[in-house]
Length: 378
Image (cartoon, rainbow, N blue to C red; front, side):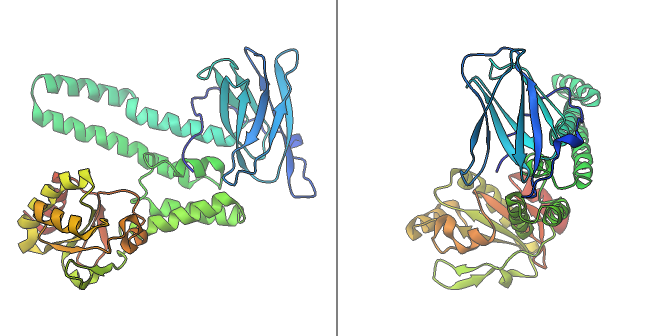
């Protein structure tokens, strides 16, 4: 499940009413979804739960003469819902144990939206404001003005310095975000935010995902969101920085099984690639250069091809000058190594230390050589 919630919202206020939570025999409760429509149209207003199993039911919402509505809903668990206004404006919302007020334009897909009373939406709004502040706040704008002047003056040293300062500001914002998320209870908003790969660095914040998964298991033990988050966390663990890299044992071009662990004692780049992968082929010269520069200092490359045809694999090895260890079971993304490392796309690379622990991922271009300079010296 990906981050899809419409977060361009204003006027977030907590408005939880005890009367909204009437406990039922099934363990569920009632909440009220209310609001106003600015520009009613001909047609229907309806609400439907968004479910991966496709078993969601649709229910209509009646509009009063004053353009307001109030729909009582019975819930047994937290859920994502879509409210559709006349097929003109569609809003995704999160519902749990509080009444929610939803005010909309009703006529324009990009029209006015206001959600009140939802702690989930409040958290997403808070996160959005935090990230906007770190990326577009006064300090960043001042740096941007200095950066433009430095570029115009061809002051490359100052340009680099300002770029580093900007990156530090962004990282500071992300650090504050992670601290905020660690304080949150299990919620749909937390689940949703953890799905965004651009929001939280999964590799360097494994503890956040582990802690969150534990909260979900404790508070929502039977929820499908818990199952999905726990599964995602287990996959993150496999290739997180600081983890021991899983063993790979696949045949080389001669058919001999070569184990990744046979290279222990050296810094090793596990490089997932294929002949058919254009970005991989463009990156290969960078890896070749790094290999020849640092091989004598204890650096090795362990190439894992996701090709399906041995002739293609061998041709690319020859054309690109890939003289290091190469292995493949020629099973494409069904390769045992690809499954073990949860490979979703290539190129994908992992740098290991002498003990086989992951110290960096996806170092492209000069970044690989800079890291190798750091650990092996210039």
